[in-house]
Length: 575
Image 1 (tube, rainbow, N blue to C red):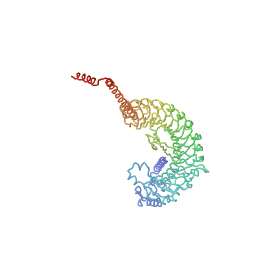
Image 2: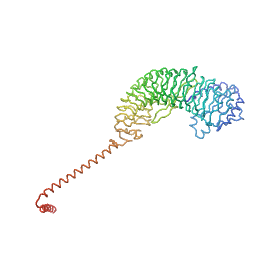
Image 3: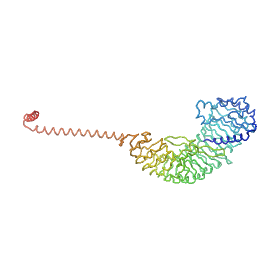
């Protein structure tokens, strides 16, 4: 999740406004002691090519690159020394490496008494433990980002900060348990570290309402049950607990989080049913419970009470029962992933009421959530084109229905073809019957179609050849018959897309009769047996004829006379 993009934009707008307001008024130069502190900071850094104009002869440090000062007092308030991943990815590798700072953190940072914003993200600092003095900076900072480095050690309790704090320590090698935080922390990102232990001490035993709005603990080694004491965290907008070792159920006290918009619990060991208390979380946009051991039925109230949902991902659980018709009431839903469960019954024919999947208009490429510090952007792992892909910057453009690997029956409803904005449709590994809807070509945006391992029959609709963006197709192991529509891009797919069917034509053989290899082998065995019987019959006929001639001879008195008469007749005929 990107917590900072809109926050940076707000700061930029503020700077532009301040500069415009103060235009024509003499700007104060930087404070001498702070200039000296910056020079000391540079001395401890390696590969500081980006800081070439940080030199003593350039007296006004407020004009140094990546340094921002208060336009009234001249105090240094911001150091933007981070590297965005986008910038690095778009640069040549050598150039990107030259932009990364290395070396050590300098205690001269403490001399910048008015510093409120410090970004050191995505650099290449020495993989050592952060010195204790560094954490004292959090007492007055409003924004601290040291993500994407190689920092190690334990994170101490952060209980002294006076201002509202955005804290991003993600993608490092921090170990130990979760730190205690003060009620002024509003964004906390500790994702992708090596933190372990329980959440209990971190979450419970709070005397006051916490101001935290975003909590990201994804990709650690946290374990135990998710504590059932969320009542003091009512300001939370987003919770990200994916890829840990949590067990037990989803705590019912999460129903107290009435401002919650994003809840990610993917890839843990959670079990039990979805608690009814989540009906109170009416602002939810994303529910990601994938890859757990959750069971029970999909609650019908989700389609009635959680009307703002954009994403539902419940794949790889143990849900049973029908897909509730109430799901069709989610007009904003763009991603519905219920794959790899034990769902049964028919696909709801009201599925065309998912109107967000009908529009072909380009929506916002990102799914964002508002906080008091601006916006952050959601991310999601989705199965697309036969592979699991991570989406963030383009998540808002994905429109997907995945009901694969269940026990669904009946026909594919024709209403499915009304979802004309759909990018991916996966109904594989079910018990679906009937024909592929003839109007499937109306979904012009389809890039991925997987209907394999069902009991579908009939021919491939010719309209499927009109899917110009189709790049993944799997119709294998069905009862489909007839010729694959020719002169289309369907011939560009490999034969594996049509295996186990009665289809013919390119990319399969052009013959109408597609005989499995096993059947050919069987016929060869049968034919070989038949040839043997013919030989036996011929032998039997030969000996019968021979005996018919030989027997009279055996009972004739004069062998010589008989043989002579025979030879005489043959001789006469010869002449």
